[in-house]
Length: 241
Image (tube, rainbow, N blue to C red; front, side):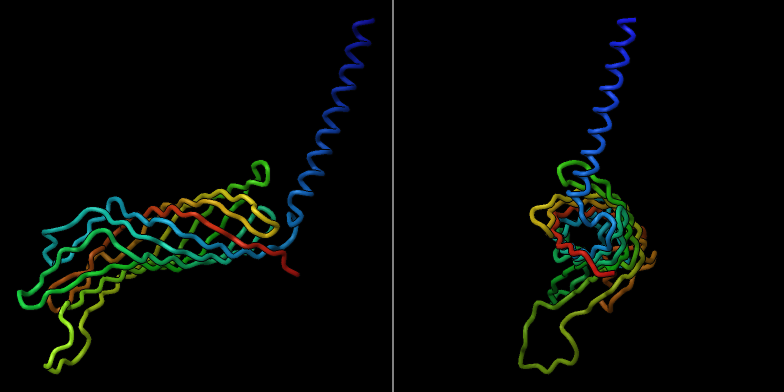
């Protein structure tokens, strides 16, 4: 009987302790995220690396000479609307550089430079998961339009000869994108967050490349896998609606 009474008292104390802990966690959660049940607007900016690890970068119609892979410094901006754990929005990404030069057919008397840039306009949906200490993780999908810009431009400057037209030719390759991303955010002030983001996406480009008068072609075609890793900073604010 004595042991039964001790067990009953212990169980009652344990139940009371668990209830108090749960109540405290709910209170802390409410204090940590006052916008949990409000509409929140966010503006997220990122800088990082856009990598095309397995892309075949070609520049001639015969495609006999190709380089493997490419890397680009990338900037991005994402305006988002968040309701509780869910967020949706749209954004743009600019790949400003290229580490791999596409082979090209330069005539002996017309030396040229080649530059390649990346551009994407996409929509996104995210699901946020609170972790601890204000940290939040998220997973999301993206889809939209991807553009590869190949510019072949003459190295020769202005001369005493009259030339008509531009010094370069631009080939634009457009396709749609589909990607999966995840990230981690941490608060640094009342309305500011810093974090990191990683995303893998496929760019579905046309299978036939555009060609210029020198028989150069757009450097990428077909399905191209991209990996985007960025550091981010975001500003969030509670909206009136």
